[in-house]
Amino acid sequence: QGYSESPDLEFEYADTDKWAAELSELYSYTEGPEFLLNRKCFEEDFRIHVRDKKWTELDKNQHRTHAMRLLDGLEVTAREKRLRVARAILYVAQGTFGECGSEAEVQAWMRYNIFLLLEVGTFNALVELLNMEIDNSAACSSAVRKPAISLADSTDLRVLLNIMYLIVETVRQEAEGDKPEWKSMRQTFRAELGAPLYNNEPFSVMLFGMVTKFCSGHAPHFPMKKVLLLLWKTVLCTLGGFEELQSMKAEKREILGLPPLPEDSIKVIRNMRAASPPASASDLIEQQQKRGRREHKALIKQDNLDAFNERDPYKADDSREEEEENDDDNSLEGETFPLERDEVMPPPTQHPPSDRITCPKGLPWAPKVREKDIEMFLESSRSKFIGYTLGSDTNTVVGLPRPIHESIRTLKLHKYTSIAEVQVHMEDEYLRSPLSGGEEEVEQVPAEILYQGLLPSLPQYMIALLKILLAAAPTSKAKTDSINILADVLPEEMPGGPGSRHPAQASEGGQVAGWDPPLFTRLSPQFEYMAKHLVFANCIPLILKFFNQNIMSYITAKN
Image (cartoon, rainbow, N blue to C red; front, side, top):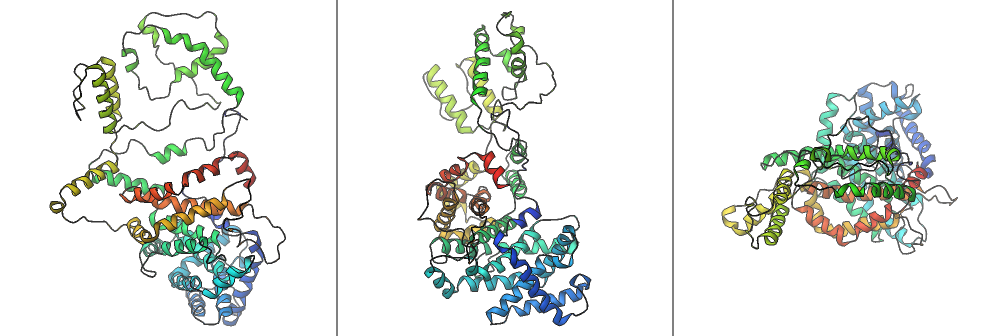
C-alpha cells in the first residue's frame, strides 16, 4: 500500500492514553487470578469489623476508620500478614469491583477510594515498604541464584507497585466530578512527589535506582514493566506534560523579553498524519511523470522576483495541486507559453479541498532562522559579490544584488531567538566577569530538584534505560546476553501464555522515562548534559530500530 491508499490511524498525540486504558496497561494476563485473591483478603478482614454492610453502603467516617485500620496492618512484622493487608488495600484501590454493577460505578468508587487512601497517608507507608523490599538482600541473592525468574519471585513488589501506580495515575488526571478538596490534595501530592522527602531524594530517583539495580543483574526479580510505568507517571505528575511545558516555555520567553512563540508545536503535530508509510513504486512513477510534464514551464524568462514576492513562499502552493488535477485532461497538447509577467503567476483560484490524501509539500512547522544563519549568509554573499566582509553586521546590503536583498528580508521575517541562545549569551557574560555578575540564582522548580537527584549517577541511569530499550527492540537475532524483561509475566509453571505486549509496554515506559526529564531541562542548560549521555550511548539508533519495521502492521497486531 502506498501513501494515498493507506488509511490513517485513530491516534491522538498526547502525554498518555485515556485513564481506563492506562490502568489496563499495568496488568499482565498471568495476574488474572490475583484479582480474586485480593478480594478474598479484603472481605476476610472487612467481615471481622463490619458484618452486615458492604463497603459501598458505609458512610465517609466508616470508610476512613477502616482505611486507617488497614494502614495499621502494614506495620506488622510478619511478612505474610503484611502481604494480605497490602492485597486488601489493592482491592480497595481497584474500586471494590465485587460490589459494583457496572464499569462506570467501579471507576467512580475507584477515584473515591484512592483519594481516601491518599488522605490517610497510605502512599508514604507504601514508599517505606518499597524501600525495605529494595534493600531485601535475601530476596535479591535468592533471585540471582535461580535459573529462571517467575511471577512468584516478585509478589510483594508487584502488589506495592500496583497500589502506587493506581494512586499516582488516578490523582494525576483530573475528572469532571472531582470534589474541590481533591484538587488541593492533587497539588499537595504533586509537590510532595517531586520534593526530596524520601531518603533526601525525590521518589523518581528511588525508582531510577531500581532500574539500575535490575539492569546490573543484582535484582533480576524486580517487575521492571511496573517500575517503568510508575516511573513514567511519577515524572509526568511532578514535571507536567506537553501543555505545562508549552506554557512554561511561553512564560520563560516573556521573562527574557523574547517575542512569543510563532506557533504551538504540539497542536501542529496533533494535526499531522499519525503514521505515514513510504510511497509505493506506482506513486513515485506517477509523481515523476507529472513533474516531467511541467519541467518546460520553468524556462520562462523572468526579470526579477517581483512576481513571486507577493505571496509567502512557505505557504502551501494550491496552484500546483490544481495543476496535478488538470494534468490528466491537458496532457502535452495545447500548451501555451505566456510571455506577459502578469500571466506568469496567475492569482490563486479558490477550489474545494480534495478528499484524497496528498503528500505534504513542505514541513508543517513555520520556518525558524537564527541570527547566526543570517550572518553566515551575508558573509558568504559579500565575499562572493564584493570581495570583503563586515563581521556581524546584518543591516548593510550595499553592493549586493537585489535577489540577495529579498533573501535577507525573508530570512529576517522568520528570525527566531531561542531560550538556549539567551542562556548561552548570559553564561558567556558570567564567565567573562564572574565577580561583577554575582551569585547565580537557581530556581528550585521540580525539574531542577529531579536533576540534582539524578546528577551523581546520571550516566548509569541512562545506560540502564537504554539496556531495557535494547532488550525490548524488535530483532531477528536471539539476544542471549540481554536482560530478561519478561520475569514478571512468566508464571511458576510455564504454559506459553501471551506476553507479546510486555516488551512494547516496557519499551514505552523506558522511552518516556528517558526523554521526559530532558524535555523539561530544555528550559535550562542541563539539557545539553543529559542529551549528551543519551547520544553517546547510541540512544537514537535504538529508537530508529524500533521504527525500522512496518509500523502499521505492528500497531494492528498489538491492538
